[in-house]
Length: 336
Ligand code: NDP
Image (cartoon, rainbow, N blue to C red; front, side):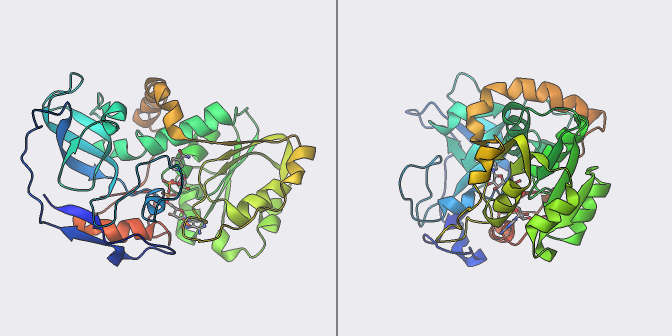
């Protein structure tokens, strides 16, 4: 059973060599008698920014089971059930959820509680690591459930070309909002405008003054900020929020590799502007998954939403793909 192993806990920017591939472990392809789990063959594995936080020594309570140094890492994936002792799953089922980064995995409690059966196979299966999986639910919950958007509002999305951001921008356009995104290259800026239909976009790596860039893009100010990056961008957005605006704190990818997180200085503005700022944890919204599919599947089939993925072949490609998320190497949703 080929596996991706975390060599040891890290600090700072991750390197490909922090992970290695092991072929040492053998695994019987049956669920043990004592377990009520499922044995799966992993088909697609998803590289997500939160995985970096699990590569460091755990401190305090965490949302995910932290990685153990010297052991296989885990993350989201699409898999096929080869054997099941769980009443909800049968041999041959396709599923998505948390699995091991290895060829075959035994999925048991607690991960099996949020393992979803894939009912719609007339779309690419890899979509269940992105638009139809955890990142898709994140975009949906953050935008519709937390931001309470209205037609004509001004929406800003950071890390806008990524797995979550590209979808937030398209939801906002379908709602009749004005949408601008930031991303880290000219190629991505082009994608935002010409592929996803954003009204505007800028390359944050070329902007020395984020406040000025935002004032240029939003002369009237921002109603909704979907924050994927935190740090200096969040601080600059706060200066540009309109009264009664909403900020969803989805992720802070600009901070994940820093030992000391950058401070946010402009928070007092949120008081005067009566802005609502709320943290998002996607699992809290998994009960809405069917409602989400009912909205998104028709959009995909009618071509009203497009989705860009960045797929590499083989477990060997995972270390570089995961590390690449922090240099912006991925264009769209990163999978293997
Ligand atoms: P992406 O597919 O967008 O990949 C990460 C991207 O972040 C990179 O491609 C890169 O794009 C950008 N990035 C990397 N480093 C920096 C930096 N220092 N400053 C600004 N941008 C940077 O990831 P996702 O769409 O999967 O995730 C987006 C955010 O949502 C992340 O923060 C993630 O942790 C969070 N998240 C939160 C969830 C929740 O429940 N709260 C659930 C899922 C995701 P570029 O080239 O543009 O720099």
